[in-house]
Amino acid sequence: MSAIRAATVTFDHVSKRYPGTGAAHPGAVEDLTLEVPAGKICVLVGPSGCGKTTSLKMVNRLIEPTSGRILIDGADAAEREVTDLRRSIGYVIQQVGLFPHQTVGENVATVPRLLGWPEDRRRARVDELLGLVGLEPDLHRDRYPAALSGGERQRVGVARALAADPPLMLMDEPFGAVDPIVRERLQNEFLRLQDSLAKTILFVTHDIDEAIKMGDLIAVLEAGGRLAQFGTPDEILAHPASEFVGRFVGADRGLKRLALARVRDLVLLPAVTAQLGDDAARVRRLDASDSAGFVLLVDDEGRPIGWIGPRQLPDSGGLAAAMAAPMSPLLDRRTTLKDALAMLIDAEVQVGIVVDERGSVAGLVTADEITAYARREREAQTA
Picture (cartoon, rainbow, N blue to C red):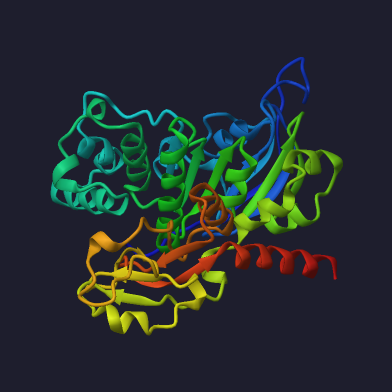
């Protein structure tokens, strides 16, 4: 991987007005001032027509501001040659915009090709990025966009935006065109990527839940393109700056704050485990009180197979997979507590299994501990 590159982005009293309409025109922006530090995700959120996409497009000059400046690492974007500027910024949109008559590999290599990279360097970068976004290079490099699912096309779009290692990425409703299950998976995988890439990202969405999940910082825009509040998700949820922000964030702010915490913030309960083939009589002597007498059956790599309850446990003999009941939801340390609680409720269970990067059992999380965490956080805010 290349060394991490990121840029500070500053909106300095930026406005976009339309002739004869003033700031009330849909998409207008009025005196936007904020700074996004290098390596952070800033989400622009607000109702339709509040200027979110306009703000994004002014950064790469698809739309020119009528006043103010946009600075990228201190340099005025308006003074840069526009083609050079755009090639230095990754851009991901809702409909992806892949070239249909080019292969996946050719699509990903678009900007490196324009920059004159040699073929072997382009190919190596394509394979590196396809692997990063979860697409096997040998299986996907030579396919065409029409043969891909919506989620796969979106992954290719992200890979293409990252191809020339831009210090800044613009993402306009990037996951809005896929179904909710794929959307959640893409969000989680993109956050995993960001842990290592640490790009500066401006991200547009109309969904406050997505903003809370994805953003290090959130800019809430209101009608007329005015900035209603700018801060961390926790600041905006705990202390809305106005009635508008409070209504937009919603009455369930306490539940939404669970999206700010992750499984790694909890102390995991130990899992009482037994391996395939273990002697049932020995397993009967294990203390499984933390999981209501159930023992978690795992394979020889420590990966969970299912629960064995007291009634399913024989008096003697070895343990077999057929004895195990269906598992609790599998979580990892990056899973938000909001998602974890939703998964437990959907599965109608009280315990979730936390696994590590290899899929091995790391511990257990309970619904009671998640709600206790939320209560402690609420009490800390009001203390």
